[in-house]
Image (cartoon, rainbow, N blue to C red; front, top):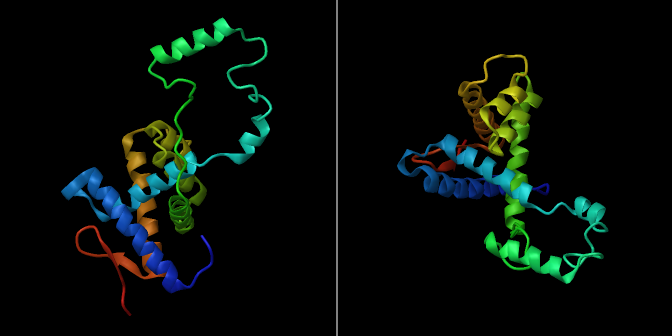
Length: 195
């Protein structure tokens, strides 16, 4: 996200929130709330960033897999056997895991939404809250989230995951209100707060 004027940042955030409203509506329908909008945007942002190709890893491992399927020492019979196994397991021929690269707008939106996590710095333990929120958005189980958020607590219930989600969304909504003058409106929409 580039440095832009507050008006441009507000307009961009409102467009992202409209997209989040569509995601929340698709997931929960009539039961969607403003917190669902913000949370679905965060979940999508983490997914998009996770799907982005890791260029450094590609550079480090490029020499290890330069031979592809026809590596030195692999006979023609072994190639046929590998391909037969792939076809029997319903994989596409000569194709690994199908990857979809995110579009540029998706990456820009994801990075912009992840910058909203800076508003979680108002928390008492911001690093723990941020780690736990990203783990929860990534689909981590309740025990992992609880371990990130309160490592010394013995109870590892769903309550901790609920607290992490609620506090994260609360800090983001507060930041939207204070910094960008964006407040929840009717339904699951957001509007500018006029002074």
